[in-house]
Length: 441
Ligand code: ASP
Ligand code: MG
Image 1 (cartoon, rainbow, N blue to C red):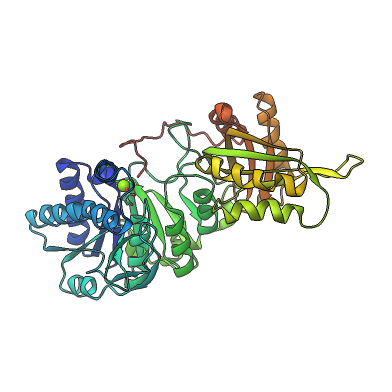
Image 2: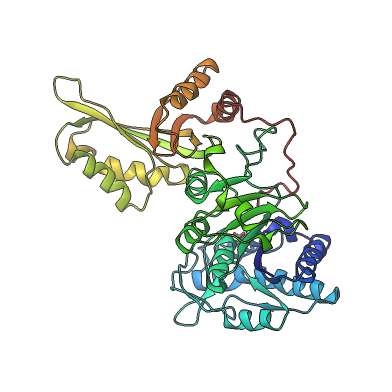
């Protein structure tokens, strides 16, 4: 018998039929003898709809405390309906708000951090043999105010609950059959990744792969929570995300009995392919500061001004100054949404630093090739850049880490770039990936 935390995203509980299908899956897991705690997101587009309503009644911007109060209602609807649907199948179930489930957070509304997770009522419910259902994405602050963890935060709720309950696995149910070597909406022949390390997953999530909330992956790494990302629309085994903790054979629900030595974590990693996948991020912009005096402190000033403005910078490139005056250029990428703020911050410095010009390009994207041990293999970069060259795609910037090579391209050719690199590394599978819902959550 295992303890499972099962998280269902908005597209998995989008309407009555979907909720009943999820109820059946949960009840089946329970009937198979496992303890099941469930975390749900709000139904379909509920969160967006509520945000929209808030905007309509408060054109000056809704107060954040009330906004959190409103948004958490979305998850309360789905948790209660799911509890009813499960009970209707004859399986005892009980729903809990984030507060009731012991999700204590700081008081930063809209982006609260978890401080402590004490799910004693959930544990008691499981002990009685009942299914516990927890509203995702929410908690309660030290002042007893209701908070939310930020968009997509239900993944984090699920991982945090799994860690606190010491669950055997946290299953993340979504509308695709797991993690793919590229976004199947762009590369229909992308292959499903059967297993991947948590470090690679972290890199994929950080580089724009939309399937898992970055914070949830960070949390899973910190607390050693094994994740299984799979579809709620099929019984296919999904992607196992490996952590440094042994899994037991009891976890497998497909009816097969496996020995402990045959589980995912203990298989020979040497057999794994070098590349685990391609992530892409379409919504970036680039700023180039032209003619920066080549002296200590110049880069610190430019980058400092942008960070002080609250903009997170991604890739930074400074070229070697070749001009007789000792001037160099600094380019960096940032979220497209922060473009205006960042340009204003740099322009303010322009005079003081004696910078020639500040150039802004709003329309760039980033492609990242990710795989463990990738950097120690120079042939990988060669093949990647070769594929882009052959497709006639210009690389604007390059950056690398131990397990990643990223390039910046024009946004219009980004999808083509993803397909070209995917092909070059022969990551395509024979079968088309199935996207059941369409939201990727
Ligand atoms: N319902 C929230 C959102 O849409 C949280 C989540 O789905 O994880 O962002
Ligand atoms: Mg959602």
